[in-house]
Length: 438
Ligand SMILES: NC(=O)c1ccc[n+]([C@@H]2O[C@H](COP(=O)([O-])OP(=O)(O)OC[C@H]3O[C@@H](n4cnc5c(N)ncnc54)[C@H](O)[C@@H]3O)[C@@H](O)[C@H]2O)c1
Image (tube, rainbow, N blue to C red; front, side, top):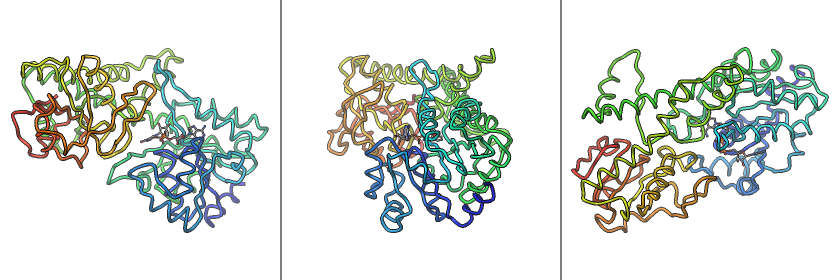
């Protein structure tokens, strides 16, 4: 089985199945297509399947060009919601969401649903890989028994592995194709096959078990969450002391060793850093251990939107205005610069708090023309046409996300004061006594 799969990889006969065609699955499919594999994408979202089939991309930073080439011209990429077609693929790579529920407990339902569907169609000679972020033990303790309930045995009839995704949407230097990939499998023969597959598209880093690979992903994201919390805390302390954290970081990062800069902000966003560490928090309880660092970081990062609101109130006060009835423009609602994704964006919390304090809130984000409804928020707002707004129309503007294609001079013109949570105005050399940092 191993030799046959390796031969199929080398000859490009191997068909790659990708389950979940989102921010991770779609770029991954593109890498395999670029290396002349045939890819069959599976998604429960029929809209995505229709869009791919008609060569239309639904993720801004992933252009439609590759779809035109591989869907329309070459015909090597197809998308479907017919999961019985899992029978037709050699490799099944799972890239479905792994969110938290309202009580910060892992919601593995998407992974487990996918695993059950795979078990239904699993046949000898197939390889299953999980890429979704999760707690150590998921692949072996949760997925393996479901797959083996098919009567097939891992290492003998099929291979099972885990390879965490390190996608950083919008990053112009690193994308799926040049980020090394940690690869693991529940059996040694499976690891050889998986390493061979992924090495066709990226440099691979094999590790001894899925638990190590799962823990590695959690370490990477916890490292960021904790360090961001640290600078957020220092920002609040230094602010009281009249010290500008941004200037401090610029100075500190001139140290050529032992220091990596992290930057403060209005709170964490995205599908990874605010969420993944809590997968470990939940699992650690099973071992009578508390994840102090993770919880403390979460506590600090979660207070940042409240800190921003306090800064807005103070700035309005200084202008002899109250938050009640103030017209406030939020600049940037995506969770990070130059992406069209609002998941877990701190802007949502900031807007919610502003509204609860009695302000009228509008937003401007060239990447998010209409604010999507989320599980928690439904603002029913559209991005305002900034150019057409009168000068000093807003009582305050709050910069939450520093997209590179925003005209910040225009932002400054349209509001009486601007609260900058990203230090973007200083970065751009824009000086004004309207500006307050938060
Ligand atoms: N977005 C990132 O930057 C990033 C980076 C690294 C890791 N990850 C991890 O990768 C995983 C996927 O994240 P994402 O950002 O791509 O999510 P996403 O929401 O963009 O995409 C997930 C896709 O899976 C589909 N889906 C849901 N349930 C399904 C099912 N049962 N069968 C088939 N398709 C299903 C959804 O319709 C959606 O298209 C998560 O575990 C996430 O933590 C994400």
